Length: 147
Image (cartoon, rainbow, N blue to C red; front, side):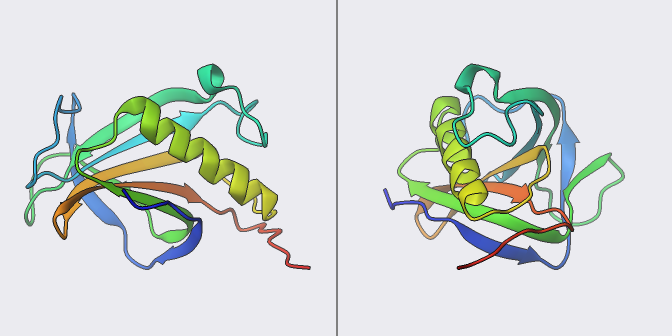
């Protein structure tokens, strides 16, 4: 398992997914999925957020589909994001990706980024490993400063 690190990611085009009602119990090698959660506003600006209070409502789940579809779509919108990913032999469970999201928030706030209260978690399989990606959009009022 590689060590995750914080990076900035400019997504130039949105990633579209077919909206699904239930997230799959297991993620297969051919699957690609996304979830979007609200983050509790009281926790979203804390360096040490409360793990039990961090996530708000699940806004949507989606599955990558090949090509055009008439089904309802959900997207990871274009924009500038804090981006973290972890590769592993199996898809990360909820506790693992939640820890990864909290570490990303800590690092992002330490770097003085202003983040939205939405958390996107993308699961896919590439280059022989399961990959979990965490996206937090940086607001237009970025206060990212380096000393």
